[in-house]
Length: 81
Ligand code: FES
Image (cartoon, rainbow, N blue to C red; front, side):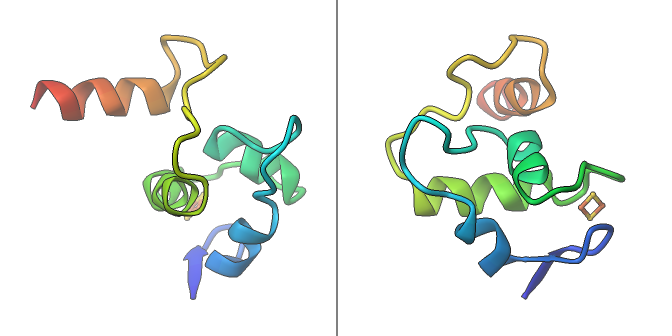
């Protein structure tokens, strides 16, 4: 299933770059980079995060992430809301 229409990325593409280890992407932005592209509209970021959470349970996606990043902000809003 295509999860990012701007970059034509499938859920399989996203899972394929998630390998537990030191160089495993921790944020959607790192997933885009891993797959040789970058966020365009950003609408798929939450879906990519959900795939990451399901594929890599227990890994803190905000570890090493700046407090002002979009992902952190979205999570903060979810917790607040
Ligand atoms: S749908 Fe992924 S960047 Fe637009």
